[in-house]
Image 1 (spheres, rainbow, N blue to C red):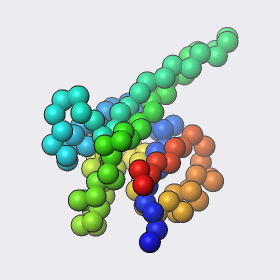
Image 2 (tube, helix red, strand yellow; image 1 turned 45 degrees about the horizontal axis):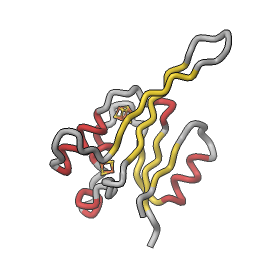
Image 3 (tube, rainbow, N blue to C red; image 1 turned 180 degrees about the vertical axis):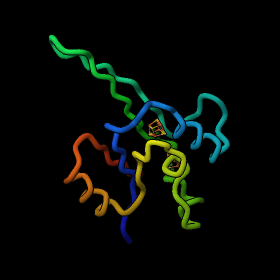
Image 4 (tube, rainbow, N blue to C red; image 1 turned 60 degrees about the vertical axis):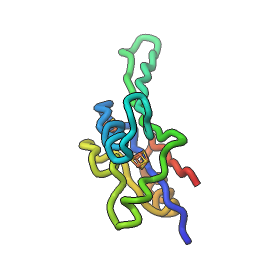
Length: 110
Ligand code: SF4
Ligand code: SF4
């Protein structure tokens, strides 16, 4: 059976933290317990304006929303990301997408 994962196109992440909240609500996590975290990075380049990146990355608590995906639904973070910069699916399909787009990360907990 194909392994599934999350593909995160962080170049388009706006840092809105909606994925964190959606994950917390889906799993009924208390404040501070997170299945995904969004970290801000400021990259300084000599002589140029600093660039700000937001990197959403799942924690060890991420189960790829097994309850939802077993019912054919998207993971909560994917469904609620307004920038549509997260995808869920078979890893081999997600790897193919990475070939055409820079600044992506692929995650699988299994
Ligand atoms: S896939 Fe589900 S468990 Fe994993 S980070 Fe997204 S919302 Fe949380
Ligand atoms: S919901 Fe989407 S845009 Fe917002 S922080 Fe998460 S990955 Fe980035």
